Image 1: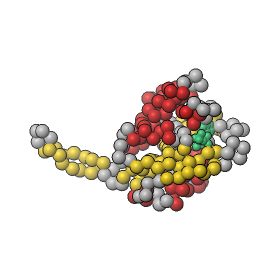
Image 2 (image 1 turned 120 degrees about the vertical axis):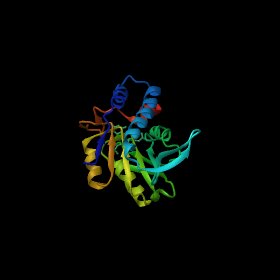
Image 3 (image 1 turned 135 degrees about the vertical axis):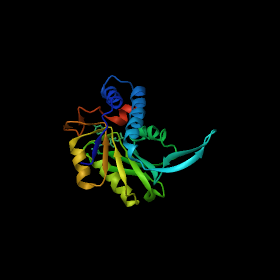
Image 4 (image 1 turned 180 degrees about the horizontal axis):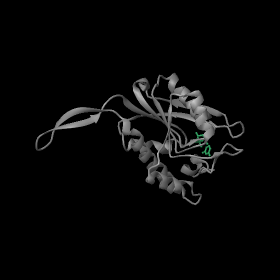
Length: 208
Ligand code: PRP
Ligand code: URA
């Protein structure tokens, strides 16, 4: 299947802290940043390298450098914004796009309100960021926007997912690889992931 679960102990430890309802807003925001870096580090182990040479102070060295396409990261507003710097720490030259979506609390359907993507997104490998994949409606809408803009190789990086959201991506965007810290049990009647971690945007920004 196209789902990769990052089971590294540091990722799982940070996730345990994020799930805890007693974790403060400041700590939750920092943990979102840190877990994104760790997940991206693992998820990027397949990036292609190319051979090169550099002059060290002593001699010429054969080295390997990142090759291939350039990277774009796209945050689904608002909670995905909390993940952006975690990847920019690793790949500072990545371009950053934003897709504004919120989930209508009654219908659970995504409502689009903003989009600004790198002009050359068709030439870039894309990481789409959102901490939560619940019904999958928001991610499906964002993926459709990215493909309409020309993106072809997209990975969806989420911290938590429900099986319903994964199934929705596999049905509507089967070419997209999903990277997760954990796959939870189910959605509740309000579309929240169980056991989940609550409302990610509210916990990152201290709103309710
Ligand atoms: C949350 C979350 C996802 C979406 C997931 O955003 O960050 O974008 O819900 O739900 P879905 O898979 O059922 O679409 P929310 O709508 O709460 O907006 P916010 O980030 O602005 O708080
Ligand atoms: N959005 C969230 O922030 N949390 C959930 O559990 C579901 C959707």
